[in-house]
Image (cartoon, rainbow, N blue to C red; front, side, top):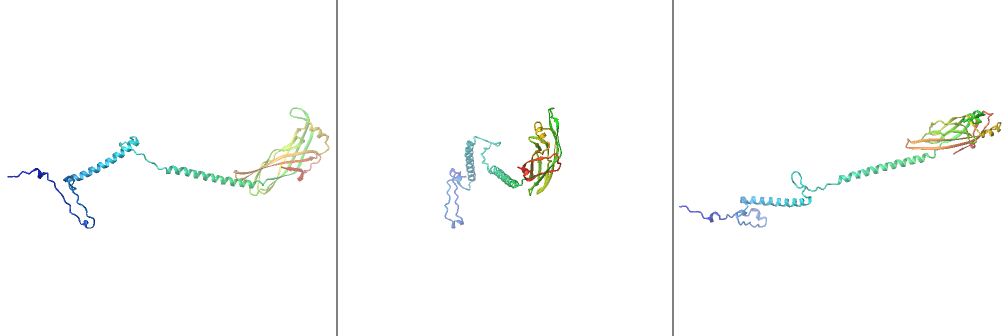
Length: 290
């Protein structure tokens, strides 16, 4: 005869008691956990599942709350995988470094240019006192003829034909650069009329050097108009003349970057003796040099 199991035997709870370990001697006494049901027991198979489910629910809950907050702030921006996107704070170090380097380079270039300009200004100032010296040495008259003629319109008047050569001495006192010398037309004038003209050919003169330059002056049948009458009266006398011209000079002190330019204005008053073909010597006080 078999005895039937009662409901109390099937549902009777199972209790587990955990004995204290050896570490209890070193540590403080720990209370043995009491579980009210088999479901709460650590050894029960549902305990691990419940714990993992609780952990996952907590993690999912935190993610859900954070994503909800982000979604509210980002207005629901999502990528291809339907994940919410977050605003990324980008570092501005690279954007700040580039302008800083550009400004440093710009300031360096300006400083270099300022130094070069200062150096050029000093060199230019040092070259200013070296003004070339011009001296008119002599004038030789090869031909001097006064006759009757007419101007280019056919008006009859006195005409003058002359041919002469002028010697000029140029001295370059500069100690560290040469000069290029030229001039405007050299004019030989009777009263206010230019009776002969010439041109000094451009040339180069080295530093600390002297140079003698010859200039040919000539005029053919130059109409004198009213001035011819006074010249005819003084036919046997010396004819007063004036020599006027400018001498230009420029030196490349530092290449073409720094140049030294000077102009000397020369004016000489003298008289021509038509019967004397000897060179006319000019004294120091015969000419003015501006």
